[in-house]
Structure formats: C-alpha cells, structure tokens
Length: 392
Image (cartoon, rainbow, N blue to C red; front, side):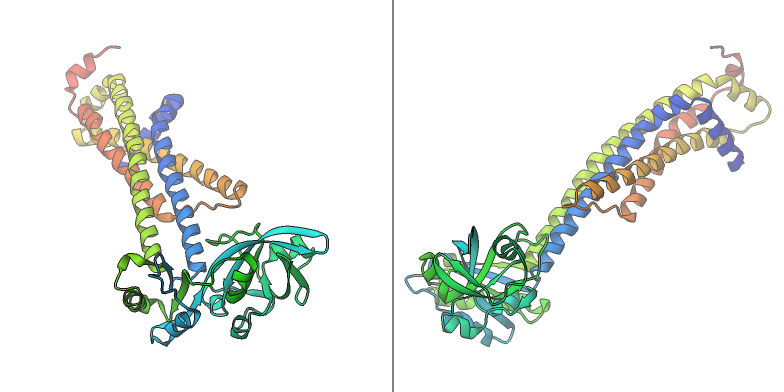
C-alpha cells in the first residue's frame, strides 16, 4: 500500500511540475539557508580554532597596567619558571624600525624577547637558530626575521649570516622563520624581526621595563594552576592591587570562542528554521488546493472501497515527498555554494558537515508531516456522496 501511495504521489507531483517546484522552493531556500550559513560558521570556527591552537592552548599572556613604581625585571620573569607548573616565561615588547639592506629600505616590526618565546609560541625555523640567553644578557645585535622580510629586503631566503641595518644599527641575521599562515598576531605580508629584549629599547628608544610577558604551562591540564600561581605572585608583587595587571588564558579564549560559535549556530539555525516553516506553510496551502482539485477522485476511490487511512496515507506521503525532494535539491545547491566558497575564497574555508545535513533532512521530514497532516485529514474525511457530486 505504501509503495502504491508513493507511486501515486510521484505521478501527482510530476503532472504539475511547475506548481510542484514552486511549492518546493520554500523548502529549498530554507535548507540552503540552514546548510550554507552553518557551514560558514563551521569554517570560521575551524579557522579561528586552528589559529588559536597554532599559538598554543597552554599559554598565558600577562600585562602590567600599573607597576607601582616597581618595574618588573627580566630576572623576575625568568624566575617564574621555578614554579613547578610553569615551563617557560619570556618578556615581550614591540616597536617599529627602518630596515635597510644595500638599496632596499622597508619598515619592519620589531619584537623584543628571549629564547623561551620560541617554545612558548611554537615557532618554526626554516634556517639558522633563534635567540639564546647569551644574546639577551650580552645585548648582542642579532636578529631572526620572517620569510617576508628575507624576500623583501634580501630577495632570497638564504640570508643567515648577512648584516641588516635597523635604525642605523647593524644586526647579524641568525635565523629565518618558517612561513606562517592564518595565525593570530602574525601576517604573511608583514616584515618582522625578533631581537634580544635588552636591545629593543636601544633601537626604538623605549623603556626597558617589562609590561608584557608570556608564560606556558607544562600541559593544558595545569593551565588553571599556572594562572592561579601567576595571579597570586603579581597580586603580591604589585601591592595587592588586582587592577594593576591582567592575565589572558588561551584555553579560556578557546572556550569563549566555542561558546560564541555555538550561539551563532543556534541563531542562524533559528533563522533558517523560520524559512523552513514558511516553506511548510506553502506545502500545506498547495496540498489543500490539490485536495480540492481531486475531490471527485477521492469520492470515486471511497466509493470502490478505499478506507480513510488509505486516503490519509496517500496525501500525507505526497506532502512528505514534496518536502524531502525540496530538501535534497537544497542540499545539492548548498554543496555547490560551499564548494564555490572554498574555491574562490582562499583565505576562508566553509565546512559542510554531515550533522547539519542530517538535521536539515530531519527537519524537512518533520515539516512535511506536520504541514501535510491537515490536508491529508481533510481529504480522508470527505463524505463520498458529496465528493462524487463535486464539480469544478
């Protein structure tokens, strides 16, 4: 009986192709809205998560807002590694300089730090080495540059051992970093150089006092312990003033991003659900028209013995098929849109998951049943005699 009802429903849909397509259009648009929007959010979430993961999920960034006329020293930062849960600690300061090599001159971003910064941020070297403690204590004029700086200033990546002028000071290039992409705080088209923390103030004329430093824990599980220990230390160090400093926990950022993206998914899913509901109303309206048009057919079928549940099943299956076919077309178009986004937008990647497709399919089936039940019930309850007397 079900197979026969499906066959009759398909014949009815195909006999009015344009009307059937227009009926499905609401479902197509609703499913496209749901799948494409959630796929974009998934892609954005993955991009941000990868960026945060690339800088490490076991990292803390401490910023001194008010040093109480007692600046934090380099030795104090290094002593933080004596805590059992602290693996690395490194000061961090930034500045700008004019970099020159022969006739080439470019503005470059300078980062003053120590050797531990390399491990905290998970950097990778293409050539040479990173800063060492001896470079910092001896205020050695050495620099580690990124790929962009090597290409823009030297025209090649094989630059270890070359001399680079930074604001008139001659630095020896001791290393070149691997090219980084989609990393928070870095840009592939920006010239960057890492120099000893003790040298930066001399180059850019800034203060040597430490206002920012990075810390990494031995593992992600000890992040809370590290944050508590550093918070307690700084609280005591700066006269028990909690407003004198701030600490950013990278794992907290990850949790916050996850919460934000989940909320966005729910919001966008709700908007798409409204579109699907509108599509369901369209299905119900057309099915009511179809029931009216086929009143005599219903009367004849009842006259030859068709039961109410048979008529109910026929029209319910027809509404369900319209909804499912519209959903499948919407999913197909969504896949093409997502593929187009991934092809033409290299900086962004949308991610179409099986879960969202299954949700769209399930919701479409639900819409088909809910909005098809009333027309089907109306058809099943038509009196046979009145149905046979009906004329257009």
